[in-house]
Length: 329
Image (cartoon, rainbow, N blue to C red; front, side):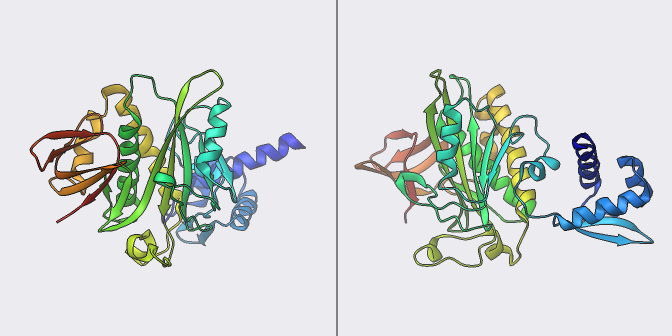
């Protein structure tokens, strides 16, 4: 009986995979693809509707998917995901303290590269420099990723930029939002932050170093309270529309795999041109806080290690690996 249930689930997943958002598919095509009868097809479609799939059945045109459920599960994430490593293993939770903390624990236990930890809500979301990250239920992408790069690969700064670039391109392609990168880890629309990224290093029981990249992407918030109102935005605020998170999650993961593999092959320089093109700081006058030191000057470049290159006010060139950079007049 258990084997039969698994077989039926496979057919249902095959139907869900074959359906395309906004495109009609004929019933006979679905039947042939799934290897079932028309009566069985109706039962499978009914089951998918109960799972949250919005499906339209038109006698003349066929069957089309209007919207897939905004449900975070390993099955739903993997269904249309076009990657070989990144996101193929997903740990999905209703609520966690911090996805980064959970990812670090899993990484220390030897969890494989590419594993994703994602939650509908974080109660203790982490930002850079010990700040908190507000992560309301079902309103954003609260996700962490485990990477195990070779020792010679780019430093965490460069990988943070890979992550920011992946998010920015996903937002542009999926949501039509003109996202930009503010070195080293922010993704912005205009002057407001739509995504923050936190990179943390750790080691597993064998002493092998790994990196956890944490993502906080504001998707469906209608507003922000307190001080956040002046500095934060979301996809919904920018577009006026609520969007499903899954297509954005998949595109983000696909971009990450493409750009990360490109860096493993060619170094960070492989995506550097794209990063420069959507950087908010290129050519701008900035102040960079480095602990107790503040550096002022004009941004000349982002180099092939992800460093911010600044010509300081006294004429020197400084190469900055990390810090808090803000534009000044």
